[in-house]
Every structure is written in C-alpha cells, then in structure tokens.
Amino acid sequence: MKYIVVTGGTVSGLGKGITISSIGRLLKESGLRTTSIKIDPYLNVDAGTMSPFEHGEVFVLDDGGECDLDLGNYERFLSVSLTKDHNITTGKVYQAVIDRERRGDYLGKTVQVVPHVTNEIQDWIERVAPLPVDGEKEEADVCLVEVGGTVGDIESMIFLEALRQFQFRVGRENIFFVHVSLVPCLGSVGEQKTKPTQHG
Image (cartoon, rainbow, N blue to C red):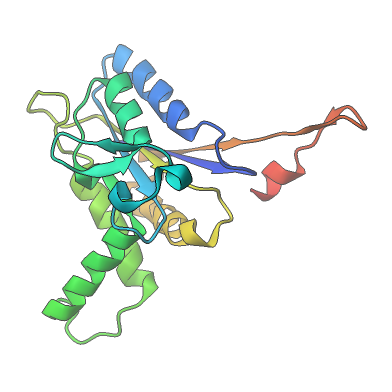
C-alpha cells in the first residue's frame, strides 16, 4: 500500500479535497486502485449533528455514515463507495481510546496522547486503507489521506504527529506528503510572498 497525504496551510478552503480527488483520478486512469480517508480534527464523532451554516452540507454514505462533503467528492471522482470508517474524527479516535482504556486493553498503563492516541490514528488508517471500495474484492494500491483544517491549528496537531510517525511505520518510500498553500500577492509591492507557506 502506498499513501499520499494532503495537508493545507495559510488559510482554509484552498482545495485539499479537490486536490485529493484529482490526484486519485489521475492514478485511477493510470490503472491503479485508489481509496481515500478524510481526517476531520473536530471533537464531534461525525458531521451529522453539526450546523450546515458552520460546517457545510453533510454527505450520507451508503452505510449511513454522516460525514464531510469531501467524501462525496471522493466517491464521485474515484467511482468508489466509502464507509463511515473512511472518515476519521478526533471524537471517534478519543472514543476508541477511552473504550480501550475502560476494557483494560492498556493493562493499567497511563493512557497518553503519545503513544496511545497517535497509535490509534495509525492503526485506524492501516485498518481502513485496504478495504475494497470499488465493487471488486481487491485492495487499493494507493490510499489518499486528507487532513482537514489548516496546519498550525491546535486541533490537527495530533494527526500531523501521527502521520509523521506513520512514515516510519510504513516506510518513507511508501508515503508522499503534499501541502496546499496560499501564496499571496501583495498589491502594494506587486510580488508574491512565500513566508506564510514557509511557516505553514
């Protein structure tokens, strides 16, 4: 399995979802099987109870999962049928970790963000990525992962750390990072400024 991770910086709404969908379509046209995972760093378990005025339209998957509209774009662009597990939220991750702690899975250890939450995120990606999503029984060749929000937001830090660790788990030759950023052109000087991207 190969992984392509897309993050965004400077401001939100730069087109991470369309970037994932476009890369995935190119790979699909090249004969590769693709799948995708959307990471939403909010504490909600899913988008079902979120205001559409605040978060946008909710997309309902075939299995009833209520998620971000980006998953609908992935389905349309890539001709796949995703599951609710293809949408990872902070709420789902923390719920899974707390459920494990309550069952005693951690054998009395102090449960911490690193390594327990970061491992849960990595395990989740590895568990969901191979699921067949194109109507065939074969696993995907490439999993595209979008990290919602903006690099630098405190909410997404744990996911970025998990993905930093993930490159060592899967091998650096099996993961590629894409960063989408705004390079503003200031009218007063008429030149592009890259500093926000350098810090994003």
